[in-house]
Amino acid sequence: MGENKNVKLKMARVEKDLSQEQLADAVGVTRQTIGLIEAGNYNPTIRLCIAICKTLDKSLNDLFWEE
Image 1 (tube, rainbow, N blue to C red):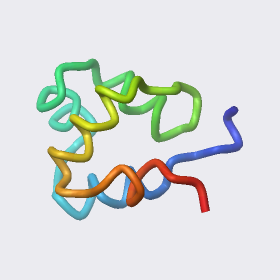
Image 2: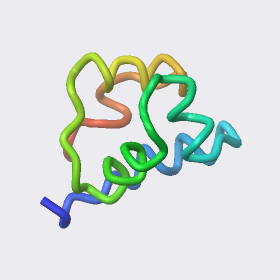
Image 3: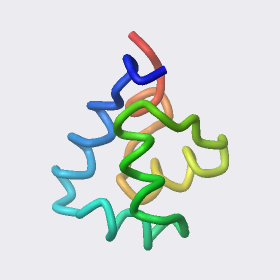
């Protein structure tokens, strides 16, 4: 699973000028959880995916759909 780094999530977070900790606080998880999602080592729930998308003004397709 580590092969599937979520670069799109990291780029969207950086575009919004948010740290992992700031995004984590906004969606109610730990900074480590965001780090694991970005590294491709954690499969977030759909509820968490939606919260992340709303915070970053992106769609599920933008951040989580594999090309």
